Image 1 (cartoon, rainbow over the protein chains, first blue to last red):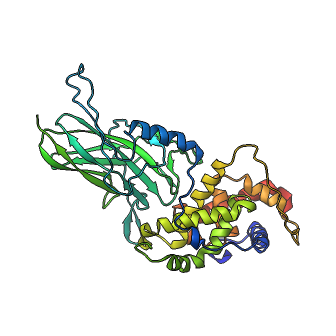
Image 2 (cartoon, chains in turn blue, green; image 1 turned 180 degrees about the vertical axis):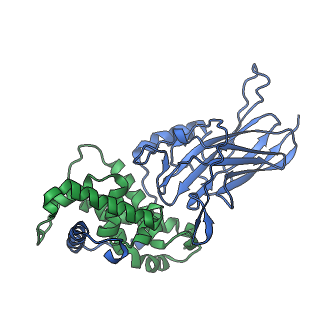
Image 3 (tube, rainbow over the protein chains, first blue to last red; image 1 turned 120 degrees about the vertical axis):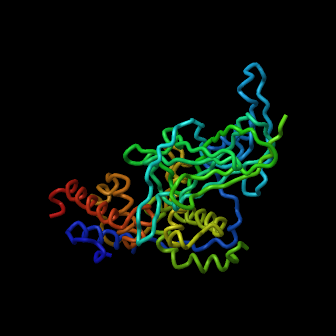
Length: 236
Length: 159
């Protein structure tokens, strides 16, 4: 292993000796549990209460869509409808929920070149979510975007994201990184590896009608993580 | 059965990586919990196997990411002041480098992670870089800083 390092030193040797000794003292592992592969894994206790609360209100249930009527009429009670997620995998997610905040896009340059290819810090991120239901022009469509990275990913710079509503509206905001409950060594927000983090999303329904594709993507120079759903816009 | 194959296929795919997975878990959780965590990680890996994209990284890095997540969840499940289970182990044949272990535990998180993955888990720098989500050069620099910090902490013991 040491030939891959830039330099040799005594500490390298001491670490190597200690590591080899430790490795030889480890009892053998238990192998692949073929008879348990389809078991449901336990969730962290701390999230059970959160999930229960989320189920209770049905709004944060991984893609449930809540619709509130136009803000034009402040005396009118909000109309809220919920929709069962249409995708089998859109069961109640386990990650923390980051509240919506309308932040102007920062347009960070996240590109860099690696082995001749353009890469971004978000190439190991997946984005999922479910968008569906019926809305009216002027409504605020809310849904949840779930981000998961396969490596620890510091959100510095904080990425932008796009929401396209059919062909009529394309808006870019900055993620609400300040409210992400995970921090790296330097106190910067981060996505820990394989930890779902849910971001509440909002977009104003434009004055259109019929079925519209609503697309959510992280903002970047190339194909970025994203998802979409179809909503029906009902004109009065 | 997943899109990628049967449980037996999965076992064959995982087998070359079991050693590093087990070592990594062994560095993150108490020995008595290690195999439980590894099994949880393998169950999770099986259930997500269809999402693994070799174009995005090596199988080892992908699996270690899952193990790291299960280790983190395992630690958060442990109540504070937990009762430690006494497990009989043969006394190690050679004395541990206790000072070094203590100094490693005191390193900054990224430095400790690099040291654990490179020396104790036995990964090359490129794979460590994949697991940590950074460039190999960054891993080398982090290891260099970690060794410098260890020398500083351990002082004359290292000479």
